[in-house]
Length: 503
Image 1 (tube, rainbow, N blue to C red):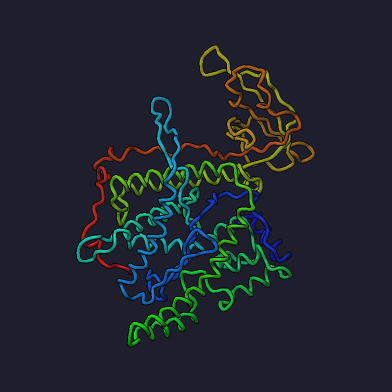
Image 2 (image 1 turned 90 degrees about the vertical axis):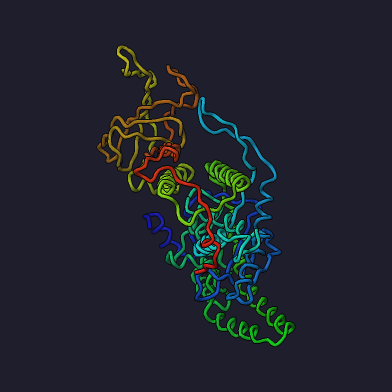
């Protein structure tokens, strides 16, 4: 935990109410997200038991598997889930908008959808469930001895796409509610306890007349708030086992159906409280204003969605069981770039996040005391000079950045700055001299356009973080040398992939 989050957690434990960690919401929330509350059979890696799913808070769709050990029932569950989720995805593909990629001669006009699907899951374990369910359905075959309905592998491809993007912090297509809430509020309990959705929401939004600590203890009672899944409560497992035994031993279809309806009611009762908590979490998150960089990140999600939908329409082959070496390296590089860029964007959007970097010395805030606009320095070309104005800032905090460090300010992100001098004053404060470059509306000589050069008395924050840093450049896949396996080959599903492998 960082210093500020630790202080916030201690404050929450003293006051009995969660403390805010952010001033804005750093993830996009769709107007109509698809919520999925899954349950799995105890003792099985990914045997689907039930789910509440849909985009209507008042009318969730119940999906159940009355005998999860039955292969046919498992795939009927997948078919029903596919009918819901694929219809939701198709609903996001109705309108497009143009956008441009590349620069200069490489500029290219493309189309992307105005919407992208957003799947909300109660917790991180639910994301792992989505990944595993996608892996176990996308490789199924629609023909042959292990044939399933064509919607099942289609569902698996999309679930795998969701799960793959969930690893990237800048993506919002698959989100866990506990992670979303814990990123915006600090509670008086441990991070592992924050993975309990009912307990976490009790701290953030306790019932009237109760504090968060007391409400969280009450929320841990599985009789009041069943687990948010995908694992079930052990006490409920015993009840479920008895019902499934009666279901298997029923002498006729009528008796089996009666027990089946009872199983459905029990499973619905286990998931409905979590369903309501999910939408309450959505309401709380929507009360936070959206960060300035969020629309841009969601536009990138819409681009990935458009490109993957186009790929499925044209090719349709599923993702391979394992990434080939070249693609794994490219994915890792992209993930590292996404993490760095996302953390910088959060800091630029949110003063509370930036404060963390000030404590570690990666940023500082000061007041402008002077500026020197008519300043020129020698350029790389002999006999010529370039315009480089400076500003002087005064700060009462320690400066952890060395002379020569390149910094930027969230107030003027397009203007580069370099630290020329740092000196400590007699009263313990520090004076920082910054040389500025760019951000003057393309002007190369003074005077600077109004607003582009900081005025005396203006308070500014400067940091080494750069939200527009260019991603790492890797060679095209087609140019992969033989020492690294050569260009990767397209994945072709095999008969072995279509077998029943739920482990």
